[in-house]
Length: 159
Image (cartoon, rainbow, N blue to C red; front, side, top):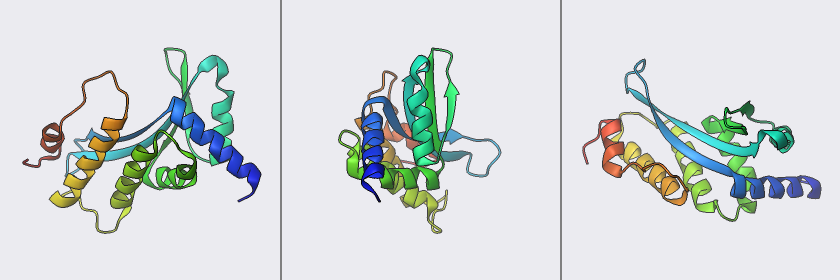
């Protein structure tokens, strides 16, 4: 990796540290047997008037899609376990404030990408809940955070 690409990745990691988020979510589903699915996301935010850095980040990383929100903000979202895992691997050496979240999200993606992952495996689901709680604890959110027992209820596990 050349010095220019390292500088670019360091800049992107700094942008993520300041104006980004790492998320591992459980989405309820009616069309699958388990009634839920996990979703990993890296998101960069910027005022829509100044969204050009998001296009540059997307070009450098080769991943993601941009959208404009109704509140004047633009987002670059990178989703999918493979894509999130790859981007985190590239950015983790340069992260300062989101290292703990990046490690937890990376571990979750590894579990979810594993051939051994089963949506009915209580041990794996419990570990994924633990990783969600690590990420959630490190994130700044204004909404009420879910508890371990609420996540277990969503997943059909008994605490």
